[in-house]
Structure formats: C-alpha cells, structure tokens
Length: 258
Image 1 (cartoon, helix red, strand yellow):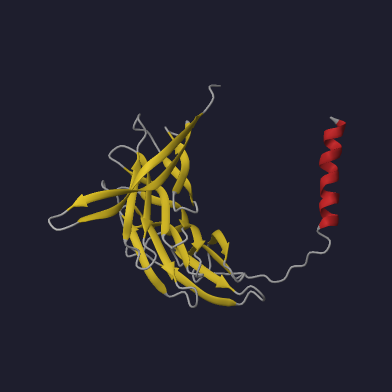
Image 2: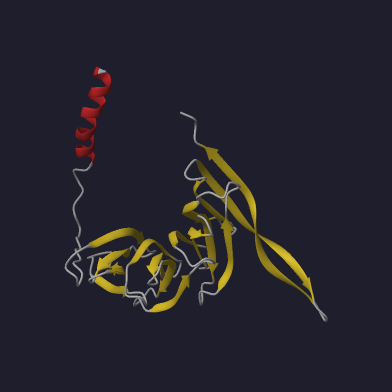
C-alpha cells in the first residue's frame, strides 16, 4: 500500500520537472452568435501544422462549427457554420484532414423529424464547401455518424449507426474525394437483430477499411474489415470490372458473465 501511494505522489513532481520548459504559445476562444453553448468535439492538424477544430455552436440551436487556425500564432484562417434545412440541431462528432489539407467533418443533422448522417468537405485554403452528403436510412429514423477517415486517394469513409425497422445497425459509407459520390455502403445487423453502433474507423495503406464499436446491445465488441474485390460483368461488346466491397474478416469480443 505504501509503495503504491509513493508512486502516485511522486508522479506529479516528476511530470512538473519534465514540463518545466513548456510555454503556452497561443490560445483561441470562441463564443458563438447565440452567446450560449459552444462545444468542441474533435481536432486535427494538417501537414503544415495548422489546427482544425469542430464542434457545435448554438445560434440559438446547435449548428456545426468548424475553424482553422494558423500553426504559428493561432490566427483564424477560416470558419464555417452549418445549419441544416430544418433549422434544428446539427452535431458534428469527428473530423479528418486529407493529404491536400482539405477538411472533412461528419456527425448528424436533424431533418425536422429525426437525425440524418451529415458529412461536409471544406477546401484547405479558405474553407469553401467542396461537397456535402446527407444520409437518411431506409426506415426514416435516426442515422448518426460518429467517425471519419480519409484514404491515400482522399476518399472519405464515415461510420456510425442507422436504424432498421427495430433497432440500430452499423452503417459505413465511402465517398469519392472529388465530388462525394457514393462509392459503396455497408450495413451490419447482428444475428440477434439487436443494437449495433460503430464508433471508430481506420483505413490501411491498401485502402481496406476497419470499423469497430459495440454489438448485441453493448454485450460485444464487434470489429469488421472491409476490402476491395473485383466483380466482372459481361456486356454485349466487352467485359468490364467494377470494385465491390466484402467483409474480409470479423472479430467479436463478448462481455464476460458477472
């Protein structure tokens, strides 16, 4: 017991010595037009060290708010707000920066009845909207994106959940870098038709996509890897090939019985 207590007490002193040379280089505060709630949800750094943050800002109802700050002095380079067509709550959950410095944010936007996945891509230089995508699932209930990643070609992958008739499924979609065209989408509903929610996504060097989250009403972790396979279609004059996705592998970790 004494040894453990000593370790806990010693840690802050050691940390203080290591941090003695740190200085606060700049600070940015943002109070939105509603002068109420402003809440950051995610941050990323581009190849030049510039900082991008996203979150929601009441004005008076929550809007997406994304800002880019200069690396050296923290000067505001650009900012973007998004208020959905229903003028109701819009909440970003994640952001990513591609190899050209363009910014992608994703989350959900209320359509007046329920939530849709909403993803937007902004230009690196001035934050101009390059494209935006909304997704309202097959049963017109809540659909929310929780994570985003960008592959080496700048294509965008988002994941989260989308309702079926009874409950939530994993929902993952890949959008083209240039215009946001839908390249593919995948749903996952567990064998018990329970609640499944994806919380994170990553893309490997080959462009394969890995998603993870909870399944069977949070009783399992569920991870799936999606890859690219070629499907050949024969026409009258030629045979062409088209990329399709299929799960390469799935992993489950079940909660231990208590």
